[in-house]
Image (cartoon, rainbow over all chains, first blue to last red; front, top):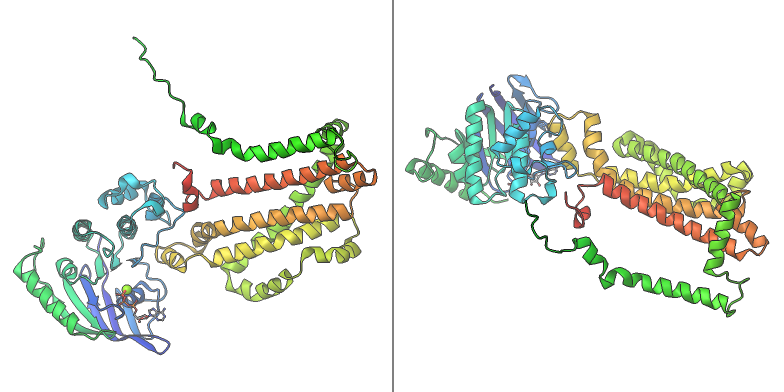
Length: 240
Length: 273
Ligand SMILES: Nc1ncnc2c1ncn2[C@@H]1O[C@H](COP(=O)(O)OP(=O)(O)OP(=O)(O)O)[C@@H](O)[C@H]1O
Ligand SMILES: [Mg+2]
C-alpha cells in the first residue's frame, strides 16, 4: 500500500467575488503527511475540498500522480469538519456506507478507534467525540491512498485527542498513505506532520519542515521551538 | 436442589396498569355512554331521534348476520385501498423523481403546485359529468386527494436531506443509485410518512363525501339508505364505522413509523434497542 503524489499548480478559488485561494502552489510527496494551519476562514477547508474534487478550481491545475483531477478524487477519503454520519444507519454500517469492505475490516477499524462495543448503536446516542471517531474509522477503513482530515479531532477531549493522534500516526506509518491534515492546533500539526504550511489570506505564507524523528515527544525543545515559530506566524497573520 | 424462595414481585407492566392515570381517561366516555343509554331507555330522548348504544350494537349484529354490513365495509375498504394505491403510488413516484432530478422538478413541479390549490371535492360536479357516478368517479376523486399530500411530502422530504450527507456519499464512492437508496430515501422517509398520514385522512374524507353523494354500495350508501327509512341506528353505525377506520388508519401509520424509523430520536422514548 502506498500514497499518491499530489501536485497543486497555481490554483485560484473564487466564490463569486470572494477570492478564497490565490496562486496556491505546492507538492505533497507520496507518503508525506502535510499539516495546514491558518486562521478561521482562511480557506483551509476549501483547499481540502478542491483536493477531494468537491470543488473545481477557478484557475490552475491539480494533479494526482501526474494525472489532472476531474470530478471526484477516487483516491481520496475526506473526513469533514462535521461527522456527517447517516442517522438511519448503525455505527458499523456508517463505517462502510458503500459496503465495499468486509465485516472483518469494519470490526478491525472500529476496534482501533475504540468503538467496537458500540457497533450496533444508532449515531444519535453517541457523544460528539465518538461520532468523530466513527467518521475517522469510515475514512480509514478502505485504505485510501490520500487521506484528507479537516480538523478531525476538534471535538475530542484532550486525552482521546492524544490517543487519536497516536492512532493516526500509527495507521499512517503502517499504510503510508499521503495525508493532509487541517487543524487549528499548531502543536497537533507539528507533532503529526512532516511539513507544516500556514495559509494567510488565501496564500501560503509559511512552509516549514518538521525534521524530528518519530516517536516525537510533546514537551521536547525541538517541537516546542517549531510550534513557537508557526504560532508566531499565524498570530501575525491577518484576521478575516 | 432446593428451590430458592422467589420474592413476590409484580412485573412492572402489571403494576403500572393499576395506576389511576391508566383508567381515568376511560371514565368520561363510559359515563357518557351510560347517560346516553339510560336517557334513551327512560324515554328522555326519543329513540327515533337518537338510538341507544345497545340499539346500534343490535343493528350491527343484524346487519352482520344478513351479510349487508360485511359487504358494504368490504366495498368501501376496497375503494379506499385502490385509491390509495393509485393516487399515493403516483404521488410517491413523482415526488421521488422530481425530488431527485432537477429536470423533473423544472418540468413538472410548478404545474403540480398550481393544481394543488384546487380542493379535490370542488371537482365533484366535473368528475360526475366525466365519469358518471360509478366507482371510477370515486376512484378519480380519492386518488386526486391522496396524490397531493404524498407528492408534496415525498418531494420536500427528498429535498430536505442534508446535502452534506449526499456529498459524503459521493466522496465515499457511492453510486447514484446507492446515494438514492442509502441516503435520499431513508432521509426522506419521516416526511413521506407524514404524507401517508395526511393522505389517509383526506382519503377517508373523500370516501365519505363520495359515497354519501352518489353510491349504490359501501358504508356511505348504507347511511344514506338508512336515512330514507329513518333508521337512525344504522346511520349511527355508519358514522362509528368511519371513525373506527379513521382510527385504524392512524394506528397503521404509527406502526409504520415505529417499524420504518427505528433510528429516529423521537422513537426513543419507549424503545429499548
Ligand atoms: N460554497 C461557498 N460559497 C461561498 N463562499 C464560500 C463557500 N465555501 C467557503 N466559502 C468562503 O470561503 C472562505 C473560506 O472558507 P473555508 O471553509 O475554507 O475556511 P476555513 O479555513 O476552513 O475556516 P475554519 O477554520 O473556520 O473551518 C470563507 O470566507 C467562506 O465563507
Ligand atoms: Mg474549515
